[in-house]
Image (spheres, rainbow, N blue to C red):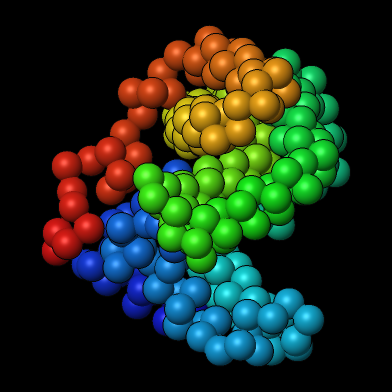
Length: 268
């Protein structure tokens, strides 16, 4: 990967500019992969088993190449804008980064998002046997062809619920940290861009929370004996959702490129 390759991809009219900035990174379930530059870059650069293996030197060589090309473009853009990167006070910047980091961690919603991730982990750790027993039960039903049962359908639903919960479990916290960081930077630096970006990240977190609530509700239907612990999780998620809506009142109105715009995956 070099700078010119990156520029070529950036100019490709197939791609929706910035669509990758406010997505949930779940490419396997995304209808817009054919219109995403990041996805194309990943497919172009990391197109072998070796390049996808973090324990293989090929992966790190490829990653280094992408970082190097990106840095070259950043330097070029800064020069075009008249910004002297060498004049930046990095010591002062480091102090501000530390301040922002602390303020992000102190937000009630980031703390609750972190607590939710732990609650989800605890539920999975405590219910490995339950999930295994359910899998065996559904397998037995399928093999026995018991009338009035739909073991394949039930298994797929449960698998979907579990995948959704696991996918967003930690991402909600990460997205809210980015949202908090953007809002805080906007206040400290009086820059309009940061709050707008914060709303985009908060919206992704909101969608993750809502999808997680729906998935936990599905699990509750499948495992009624787990009513108390799952209801505790749902209460925590709904409280978190209220906090995020209050902290980012403009987030739901944020228009994410591609996803919320009037475009379809096949639009050219």
